[in-house]
Image (cartoon, rainbow, N blue to C red; front, top):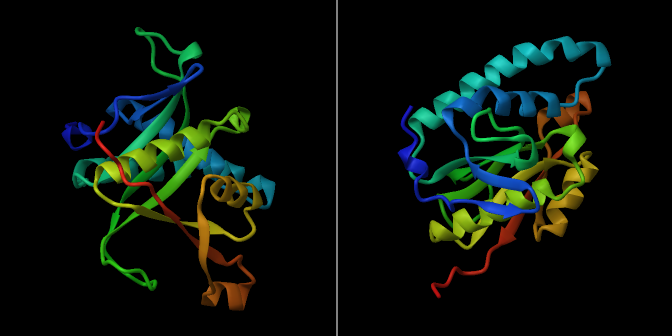
Length: 201
């Protein structure tokens, strides 16, 4: 599969023994597993759905990579201490960033950078991996010529909210829908971050 649309990504964003890079074809199933495992399933017995979810996520990722525009990136974080040149990399996190062109919120432009599907393996959380993924997305978006980025988070996801707030995001609005009103589902919060303009040295 040709992923030449990701050739303009930063080559790496590495600290300690973790590396953030563009996803490769051979990463897709493992990245889908990281995402599937990150979904909260209640009650617990519904965890049998995870393999089914993984296949669906894999197909979605493969489709997005095939049809992606130049303003799309899917990144993975790799534990370099458990990877080698002859073995598959040990993927511990993933994230996607791209442009959206619909505008259901009061923002200034019809095309805006939007971050989604940030996930880190449970046994690797708290090590700064999500922070590295977010920082790489910031660099990519400023490289595209934008100075802002948006994302959604559930109001009940306190750990994710704290991560984004520490990374410089601010709450733009809290969005209520019919599912929140009728079924007591948590509301979604739209977060926004202003990015520093990229300068050439």
